[in-house]
Length: 101
Image 1 (cartoon, one colour):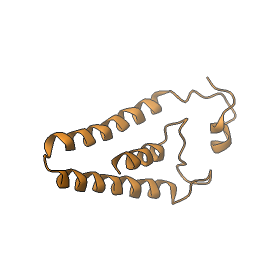
Image 2: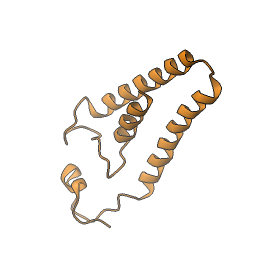
Image 3: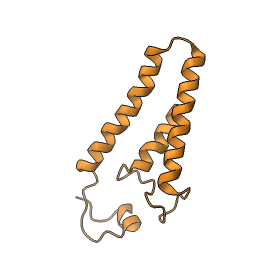
């Protein structure tokens, strides 16, 4: 259990917090699913153009989702801030977008 970390500043949490709880497990599973989509593109499509088009489309989709979750802000006032310690949904979509690109 963490007492002092960046999560307290972002979400104004006053009690101790376990960032590796159940919610983080769901986010890790979702992150693996996105990686699986990237791998399945390699397996299912043999031409480079087909792969690139799909990876770019997935990357653009992840960027759109990230922008929708954060309203284009990277500061603490975003609805779902990009927070690595909590593995927030916006963190997952932002890192997935960079991976697809």
